[in-house]
Length: 377
Image (cartoon, rainbow, N blue to C red):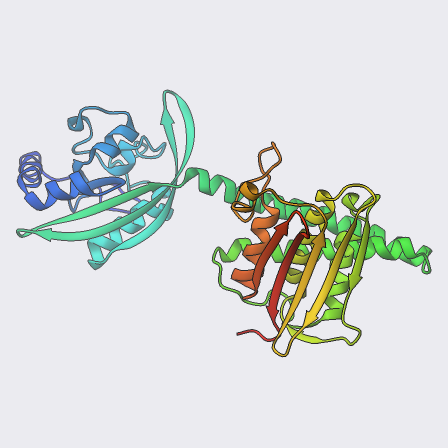
């Protein structure tokens, strides 16, 4: 039988029925099917289903496992290519790039586990549905019989958001390039205009933020690696922080008093991330302050550390204080809030190896502190 990738041969019916019986009577297989979390299917060496757990059946919308036994994985999932060739799943020209097929053949031919991402289009009730499955295939031998355990995880939503994120970065980068071009033209026409200079600084800052965010998103872990030059200074941090706060709407009608070191202090850190932490602290303080109030930034220099304190006169109620750094928690009603204080902890501690704390009393107001080592540990 013709195939474009995997062998088309299927197991003889009598042999297959015996395989199903062997699996059903195996205490090891029964335990795996009953206890393993997630979607689990057992295949023979011809990639046919000999057993399937309840979670997988539920996902397929099938209550009778006999309807699946003997099928191949793509056939059970209603893959749009599974029935294009007489040999079925694994035999079409599309199958050579199928993550599921690759993982299964690695397990069968090389005798080792393999994990691949399987992107397929399923035909369900006449409509096409794009699915992303993380497939892990494990070879296993029990009582002389060789099987392939396939564990599947539906990551369709995660892939959707990852793709959407990539589109966002791509499109925003194009817009920023256009803005940058216009900014350069304005700077040539008005070389001494301070407002034009500030606009170009903000555009440049936004471009850096995009590079930073793309790096963080692609890394997907919390280990700190300097995303910009590790060599920085208090003057550089002051400049980057100023871009964020001085024209922010929250600053309207309020005064920001800044106390920075007179002498520029060299630091081994990421100025962009530090300014993100300080910027969020200051903006939060401004938003908590009434019109006419003052927000103060103070810098304390120690031998091996530097600490920034952001003060405002408002008091955070005791019940709110307990959840200030909790992700998604916010005193504002809208979804997607509560990330400002969370990001202080994320960037300040997990990426920059610093310490973010706060105190708040009715008598003394609220002070957020960011203590940072002068050198990367």
